[in-house]
Each structure stands twice: as C-alpha cells, then as structure tokens.
Figure 1 (cartoon, rainbow, N blue to C red):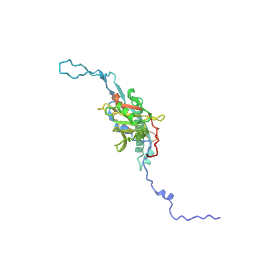
Figure 2 (cartoon, rainbow, N blue to C red):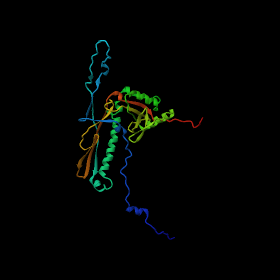
Figure 3 (cartoon, one colour):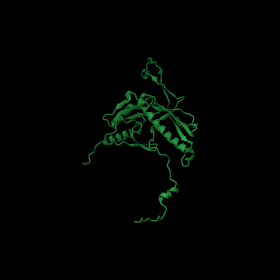
Figure 4 (cartoon, one colour):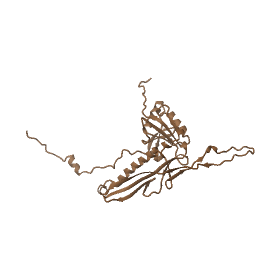
Length: 309
C-alpha cells in the first residue's frame, strides 16, 4: 500500500528555532543561602591578622563601698588583667579558579564568563565562611560556648519554656537566636499547640519568627544529627561585650570585608588563574554573650482533634 504524505503548509517550530536566540539566565546555584549571620554580626577590622582579647582578671575581687556619713576607711582596690589573653588568628577560606582564555574570549557575549565563574566561586566561599563561623573547632560559635551556658530541652521539642531558659543565660541585651530552619518549624508547632503563635518581624526585607521580641535566624549550617539540632542565642557587638566577627582590611584585590580576588597569570596552556581568599574569624568577648540549647528534637508533631464542642 503506497504511503501518503501530507504536504507541509508552514515552517515548523523545530526549524524556526534555528534562527532564534534563547533568552538565557545567569547560572543558578541552589546551595546559595541568605547567610543572615554575616549581616547581623558587627565586623571588627584587625591588624596583621591577630586579635588579642584582653580580659579583667578575677572581677569579683574588685572592692567598692557605698560611702557612709561617718569617716570610715574606704576600701582600696585595683583592676588586674589576665597575663596571657587569648589571641585569635584569622582563618583563610581560599581556592584557585581556572578559566580557559578560549572560553572567556568566545563565549562572553551575553554573560562575562570570568565574572560568572568568580561570582559563583565567591558564593561557595561565603557559604563555607558561614559554616566555619558556626562549626569551626577553634573559633566557631558552638566550640566556644562555656559549659555553664549549655542547657538541654525539657521534653525534646523546642518549647517557649526552653527559649525562656536560654534567655536567662544571655539576659544582657541579647540580639537573636540562631538555629536550623527545621528547629524554627518545630518551635512554631509547639507555640501553635500552646495557643501562643510567635509574632514576626521584618529584617532585610524578609520575615522572621520572634520570641520575646528577638528574631529566630535560620541557617542550614547549624548541624542536625539523629533528628536533633541546637539553638544558639547571641549578644553581639564590641560595645556590648558580645560576639564580633573579625576581618583583615586593606587586602590587595579587596572585593569585600576580608575578601580578595587576585589575578595569578596565564600559563602555557592558555588557562587564566585567579586566587580567591576570604580571611575571617570570630571572637566571643565575654562568656555570657553566648548560650546554646542542646538536644533539640525537630521531628515531633501533634495530633489535633477534628471535632468541635
């Protein structure tokens, strides 16, 4: 039986697309997060990459008195300092980016290939910076919480009572809670169950749940293990003797706080290299500027009756 072909009456889409230019986006990176903590910390510039934290030695030994109307002898005292204060050295988050000159020459019509490669690499570095600020075994928040500033949840799930206990540990001008988004969701469920839904506050154009007026700041860098995480409460700022970020100013090729991008040259394979470095650290100025709620369960849900009285 002979095959019958229908005559094409118009140009089809597949052929027409050969003459079309697609509208392109810049490369999207799903792992980029808001990194709120870097916006909320006060950043202190340091010289030569060293920050020395001087502290008063034995503050309870300082003697003062309320003057009486008689001529009683006044106490004598002086303020002593620790002889071996802790020194913080800036940590470097760094990498070398390689871009073939052929790629940058031929394929930068819509988007500058070098600029996009640098942008994405810097995003990765800043994500690692936030993780180090929280988890670094030397200067990270979780490693610098004093034992007396650590508490555990009452029942596992993060309740308003737990958050109030945490506030009692950092009661001198606390700034914000920091925890994993799943812990914030778990806290919201506990508040809903008790009929006290937490209000929200707008910061940086985003909405945050609050407790006692303090925002709950989410970060996916707060570790979760075996269905449990932690809630951190901070006081921030140098004047408040809180937590401060540290950075090196005046770097060659400076692109931001402690961030440097330096061109390293082109090798014989026509590959251009760029050194990207981010120098930072973090210091807890006084012990009561930081506390943590531990053993926070994130998987508890409540059953509600579906009947009305």
